[in-house]
Length: 114
Length: 112
Image (cartoon, rainbow over the protein chains, first blue to last red):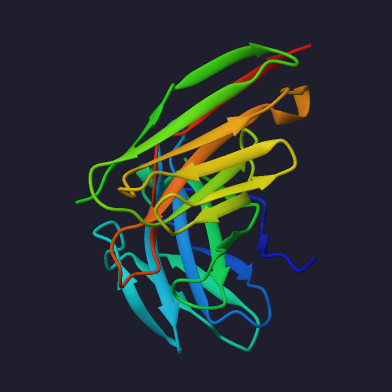
């Protein structure tokens, strides 16, 4: 069964450094998402991406964040100048359409900012 | 903005017992998703409900969406240790968005 994959599984970085989280969505899906989950808190939406542009973003997704689909398979989340409060589990998700019956999530990247 | 409230927050049951988890929305639900998460891992899709009164089952798990589309329940019959984990409900924030908002999760422990 096709699945969303994410790399790395864990990332430790120093405050102020840039990180890039990578995702490979399911191949025939058109909508891509990033969510995050701070330890002990709800899963929060960050951004959705369709047709090579951001379709929706949350208040959390400020200028520090950016997303890109550099080729036909990868979908990346870049965090510039990481802060301590960026420490969280970051999930990538994909779906074939905006309101499809399934939105599949990847296994997540655990980011720790020191 | 829409909020999803799950109850109970945590649950410990004896293996073989039935249990129910509820998800209540402050507004009409446009697609209600149930996911299972093992601690520190990804979200595994269980099922999605869209129509008022809809009910779906997968193995020993049944989910229902009420007629008013503001509450969903997840029922597990004859629970097993493999059912242990965190159950999350998620929903579209409105009729024209793909993003999901989530409840805080219900942690289930099943004692053998």
